[in-house]
Image 1 (cartoon, rainbow, N blue to C red):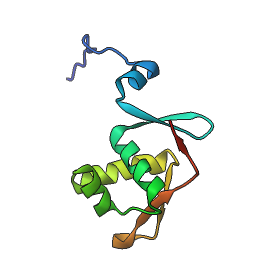
Image 2: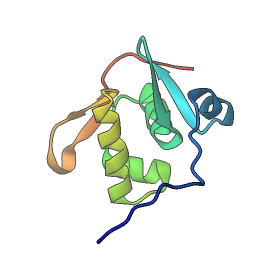
Image 3: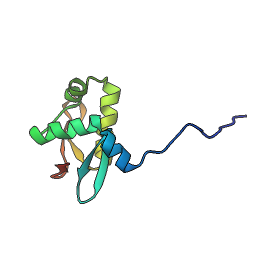
Image 4: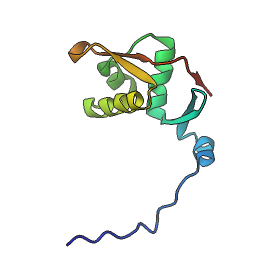
Length: 101
């Protein structure tokens, strides 16, 4: 039998708290999409360069392969980036023109 109790120490953060603490970067596509600092760093990189690869994300963020994949998949799911190609030669580019505030 498994018993799950509510976390009494949890407090939800509002979007305004997140903005003030700079724990997230907001990206505007007509609506605000909240991404973490790591994902924001990938977006900023792609605004200066045309494409990025997973190994480049690993070096940029100083993370391991699995974490780099998670960040890239999250950005694809949010439709901020798109993948080009497959396998080891996969590259990622911005899906839309976006503005960073």
